[in-house]
Amino acid sequence: MVSMLWNPANTIRSSKIPALMQDPGIIIGYRQINQTWSYYARSMFKIHNETFNIWTHLIAIFIHLSMIYQYAEKCNYYRDQQSWTLLIFSVCCIYSTTISVIAHIFHSKNIDVHFSLFLLDYAGAYMYGYASGLIAIYYFSDEYTYSMIVNVYLISHWIFSLCGFVLLCIIKLTFGHKEQQWRRKGLLALFFTLHGILLSATVARKYWLLLNGNQQYLAPITNYNWIYLSFFLEGASYGCHLPEVFFPGKFDIVGQSHQIFHIFATLTQILQIRAVRFEISKGNSSYGHQSLPSLFILSTISLGVITFICVFIIRIYYPVRNIKKEK
Image (cartoon, rainbow, N blue to C red; front, side, top):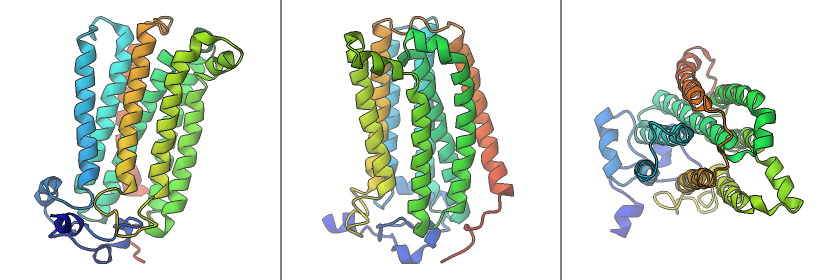
């Protein structure tokens, strides 16, 4: 059984697939390329080096659905507009996680499918990032910060999300080789950090007031600290390829960094939802303008549609230097 797990049947070594589809430190467990779509669909029930990447996010989808149901028993989503933004966030989490599951199931078919699906995966990730910005301004900001920055923040956040998504797609296509993974993921980490700083503007005043002795923000800031810690560990596991780069071939099936990244990504989302529920229970977000949730729905849908269109435009017209070039 142990032998089958660490050397699964009907899989191939990294040397048998295109360099563009190899992961640093992952030697065995790759699925056959150029197979039928049903082959990859059935592979989600078999052991290979993507199995746990698929199931960590499949489980996350059911966690989010259960959390939506549990909260629906306490509030009326239809009548309580204050809960709409939380619902948007939960739906965006499910949306991004579902696209990730699809990408991990089917990306091994060939190079073109691999790149196209992971560009769509970026679209899902940025929908989650955009929804994170919405809950940050609507639930986490204090009343003074909200009144001062809400208009500029919402416009800036929407533009930043769209431009960031397009830039990440170009980075993926430009630095797609395994040898360029560190550069690509370093740029991704830098951009997500800049986006995180923008979102942090919503809670900066709370931290300042707490440092100056205002204890009323101690509980919410404790929630934010857990979110920041989980987000940092999520980014570190995504970018560092640890432990597999130090022990090639030892963590091909279980324990690789991307699986750890998925776990921390789900944990971050759960912590964000718990923090939102805390703010609602304390009435800390009651000053949010009542028309904003409707605006959030429209802006989220528009961003989702535009990012999907951008994926197809980029894949058709962008000069993909690396996709067809083998090393």
